[in-house]
Every structure is written in structure tokens, then in C-alpha cells.
Length: 634
Image (cartoon, rainbow, N blue to C red; front, side, top):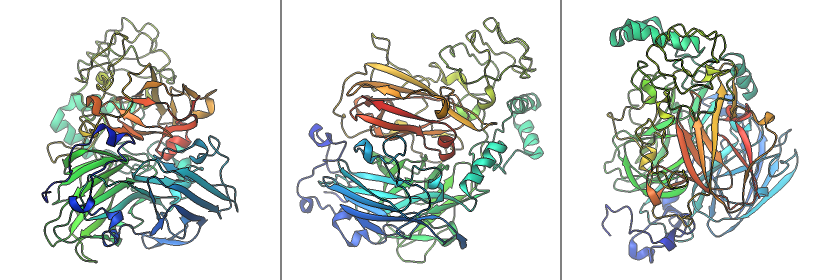
């Protein structure tokens, strides 16, 4: 096999029946493979916090004093480290994981992305009671997959205290990926505040942690670029909606220290290599609230797996990783020099970093930092406000938006209000040229969470072309109207470098269940930034009367519509979501889907896991504020 080859050969249908687990290649020696799990030398320095090898592992959970970024802290530790040790299992094993709670409160561990019995999933109140203080709980389940995953607490806000760690599952058969060495990269966000204090601050004042608000200098810069009228119009809109166009992240570098494998940027953790090696980096976003843009200046990365599932190789210079997602990439440094692994927070308020180097103690330059972007029409794919047509918004569910009465729309003159008979009392003089002819049911809406939304993505105006079947549903595998899978998201310039987008993700071969979905389930992601309330379909978890029902073994389409101005990483426990990103039969499997503001995302689900499963936004404070539901498969 040529040295430059990454993948040995195309996979047959038989080889993907376990979600990419059985990727057989015949003789490893003949193929020249040196996977890290078979090569002890290649496992050196894979993770800063140590390794617990399966199939039997014991974990002790405490809260104790440790140094983080040179300061004394009180994180939750697992076997004495925070984040916790890497747990390494192998496909085909029966895992036995004994967890002892030495805290003074209940705890839990959720094995993120694993397909296992519901009582082993680790969500208190959904699938088990939790682990009481002083108690040992034994998780037992068959390991039915391989890849890069992670584990974390599902109790309260413990995840913010460092209660997380990587989980790597080696394949039962040789993988098709050639590499000489691997390193695990776990990204987290740490605050020296107590998590409940952070939550109270978010509830008290919208933008509490945002220290990057616009200034008078920004205003005059916008006037020079866009003119006074457009600048004033946009500023007025944000003021009326009681939001900032720089609400990119709820919690920022003003309180967070961004860590890589538990180390701050100043501590410069090193990942070693020898020139000419091919290195596999398993990148995990185990943070509570932070999205990261990851790049290694001077090195091209090749994405080979997403959320633990193999994908066809995608060469990129940078990728955005949402909370709870994982990506595996290959890099091949040819020179005897150091490279910076740079993970910049999406709001540009800070970064995590490490050094990929041939020797310990080396470091490379930090790349030039980017400026925070502004939310608004441009950030979501539109080009200004003039002439917007909202006539295709009739399908939007605004049931959770109840406070629009009394809003000052003083700049909406010229609007066609023919269908808006119930919006009396509103001053619309600020949104000239807008056609709202299809918005007859907007009375009682609270737009405080929708400021600046580009509604052209709602209802087929994004340019995505979808095929509609005879039953009126989208044909499986086609991209949903309103999706923006070809965009990385806010603050990314596609002309600056090659950036991974969801459109790029393509499975190795069709997944076994090729049935068309029998029904569609549509859920709206809703919230109120000012009151810091987050929900599905306008209802917090405490307000819903029952679970979402799936029928055992049914095939369904889940449609997620983001009616808010924030990104939401949506995670379904116990089952895969097959992202309908336009790749036909090769749509990728994921356990966490990032939904951008104003975006419509769809995924196919085979409901093959009987029991009760958590379904939620993986932004920790959003989940705790109500964006959480239970899915019952029966």
C-alpha cells in the first residue's frame, strides 16, 4: 500500500452492519497497519490524565483540591484527576464499570454516544435512580460499537465541575485507517465560580458574561461600511428585541479558562510525534457551554470519523466542534518542528491550545486571534433587511412566544399587514419593505429570542432543493429545505481556509435500515434570552405532561427548527440520528446535531431501543433551564 493512502479499500455492505465497527482489512501485517491499540509505543502520551483499560474498570468520584491554571480549585475528580482518566474498551467485550460515589450528593455517569440498555445509560430520573453518596453502582453492558466517545455526569451541574472524561472503544477488527500514533484531545471549559452562581447570573441579566459588546467606535465603523440608515435600523432592531448582536455564547472567557486535557494554554501540553508519522487525533468537545474552532496552522487535517462513526476522508484546514461532538482527524507532519493545536472559542473570548512536537517542552506560535462576529442577517445567510419576504413562515410554531404585544416596531413602515389583524398596538415603522402576508397567526409572540433571525431559511428559501415524495414527506437522504449544511456558522470566513461543514460528512456505505420514514416529528427549539428560559415547542421540561413517544422499530424523521438566536447541540440518547445532509444513501450517523440559529435540520431515526431515553440540548445551562425531554420507545 502506498504511504500516502489513508483508506485501504471501499467497504462492503457487510462491513458496516455494526455502524462501521466491522471494517475488516484481512491481514494487518500485509496491509502495513499499526493501529494505536495494537502498538504500545504508539500509545505513548495519548492523554494527560491517564488510562483505565477495560473490560473491568473502577472509578472513585470525589471533590478535592487541585491546581487548575496555577490556581487552587475544587473540581470533581475521577480516580484523582479532573477531567477524568481515559477509559479504553474494546468492541465485543462485556464492560463492567464500577463507580463509587464519594461526594456528599448523588452523582451519575452517562456514557455519551453508546448504544446500551436504558438502565445503564446513567440519567437519574429517566433510566435509573442515580448513585447515592457512599454507594457503588456497577454499569454492565455489551460493547457493540467502536470509535471516539466520552462520559460525563448527568446530575445537576456537575459536568461544569470537571466530571467528564474520554471513552475510546477499539475495533474488534482492523480499521481501514492507517496511522502510526494517536492522541486524545479533550476540550473543556472551567470556571472558578460555582456552577449555580453562573446559572443565577444568567437568569439575573442577559449578557452577564458578555464583555465584548459593541462600542461607539463599532457604530461609526458600521456607518462607514453600511451607511447611517442601515446601521441605525439594525441597532434599533437589536435594542427593541432587548438583545445584543454579540450574544454568541452565554458563558465566555470572562469567567472560563479553556482547557485541553485539563491544561490551560499557558501550561502548553505536548503531544509527541516523529517526523513522517501519520497521527490520529481524537478530538472531543467535553465542555459545558463552549463551541470551538480547531486548526493546526501549517498542517492539513483529514477528518475520518464524526461522533465515533467513520466517514469518507475530508481534507480541511479547520473544523467547528459543537458541545458533545467528536471528530477524528489524521495529520502527517513531515518536518522536525512544533505545531500549535489551536481551539478558539466561537465567540473569540479565549482559546485552548497544545503543541504537537517531536520533543517535550517545544512550542509554536499562537495564530493571530480573530475578532468576535456580529449576529444578524448577514451572519445567518441573508443580505440586509430590506425587502425580506416572510410569506413562507406559515409553518412556524410560535406557541412559546407570548410577549410581542407592546413591542415598538416604529421602523416597519411599508409592511403588508394584510394577514396580521391580531397584532394591533404595534408600531411597525422600522422594518420597511417587509411582506408579512403569511403571518396571520403571530399574535402573542415573544420575539425576544428571535432578534435578527433570517427567516428565509424557514420554508425552503435557503436554496436547498428537496425531493418530495407522494406522501408529501421529504425523500430519505435529501436535505431539508431551510438547512444550511454548507455553512460552518457565525464567525467563519469560508474564503480564509477550508472549513469542515455538515455537507461534507459522508458515510462509508449505506446503513442497514433503508426504509422510508413512516412519519415525521417536528420540534421547535425555543427560548427567551432575557429570562433565560429554554424549551422545546415553548414548554420547559417542568411544564410538559408526558414523554415523546416512538413506536418500537419504527422509522421516523425528526425535524428540528431553531426559533432562537443561539446554536443548540441536540443529543438523543440510545439511538443514532442519521443526518439528512444531501448525501443520499450515504448520510452520516451522529449522536449530537448542531442546529444553527434559524436553521431547520432533519434526521432519520430507527427506534430500535425500547425504554426511556433523554433528549436534550447539550449546552448544560440550557438543559437545566428546560430544554430537555424524555423519549419513550414502546
